[in-house]
Amino acid sequence: MKKNIIRLCIALVASMSFLTSCDTDNKGTIYTPDSLGASFYWAKKSFVLDATNMSFEIAISRNTTVGAANITLTHADESGLFNIPSAVAFADGEGIANVTITASDDIVVGKNYAITLGIADGQASVSAIKSVALTVSKAYNWIVIGTGKWTDGVIAGVFGANPYTADVEVSQAEGEDVYRVLNPYGFGICPYTGEDDVTKNPCYIVINANDPDAVKVDPQSMGIDYGYGEMSLGSVYGNLSTNITKYPLGTKVGKTIDLGALYCEDDDGAYPNSGTILVLP
Image (cartoon, rainbow, N blue to C red):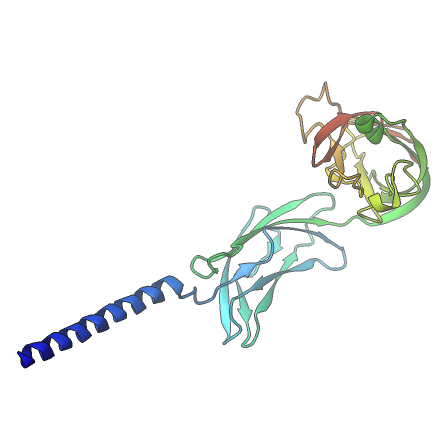
């Protein structure tokens, strides 16, 4: 009887030891993190490159600073005009490293280039931002050409306010029929903008008049928020509609630029309107 009790105790201890071992193995499978644990900080990022510096950096992190490590990168670049590394190195003690991307001198002003940069499979942390969509463009060389007249139809169209005309500083892109208007909706210029409404100062509205019969305004911030989210504007055609008859692009005749059908957008929606005119200096 005594021997049977001893055998039973030994069997129970062995059984408990086996169960404990299984539980430990399962926890290890569930909680062990990826060995490199890399992540980007953003899912989207934009860069405007100065003609004197055609490189930019993207930060990438890892979940440990112990030991040196290499993260393998993937990328998509339809233009083929960017030198993109295939890996980024972390030195021992570093939790953040920068990926340096360099543009070719062949990229042109006024065009947006799309790049997707990714972390190779198996090297990202569980909750990582595994890829970042990059928009890269080359900056214009702006030359101030004087004071112009800005007549606004955007605020009037959205809020039923009276149109206003204001003096505005105008710059022109060197070698291009592209214009930049300084703060046309800013405090002290737009009569409907209070000091607390300003979200961006300076704020520029850029107008592409390279084709005088199809003046374009790309989507861009107006630098203001009247309590409905930051406002932006752009040409309706090509952004919200492909009906060029109903929503025409702008025109340039002499020094007068009619911006055509624009839309204004905030968190409540988008509102097509017209009647915005810039008279150049």
